Image (cartoon, rainbow, N blue to C red; front, side, top):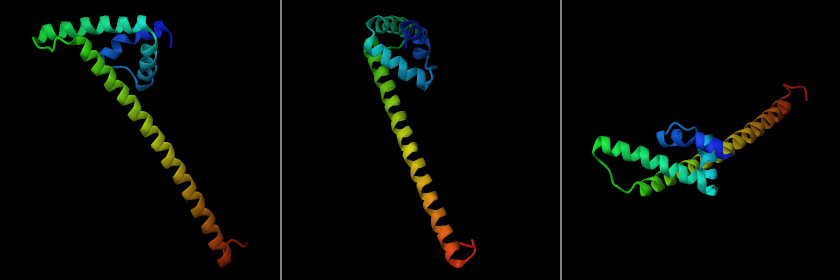
Length: 117
């Protein structure tokens, strides 16, 4: 991901409207690019600060809130990766189970003379 693409995703990230694929690439870019990370911190600070002033609430630890949000995002990506791996494993097992059932059924039919084998 380029810096331009990451900059385009800062506000969707803050608003929670970023896709999972974009989130994965965005987090990876933010980990390695200090300039984009700084821009995220600035936008997050301004956005959260304004919301807290409007709602008259807040923890006043906005940088800590950003770290918490980033950690939750990393956990989401990790969970999605685990689910994708589990889905792949289940699909593979189902394929092989179905193949074994078909082979066994063909053998049974062959022994019974239905298939002419």
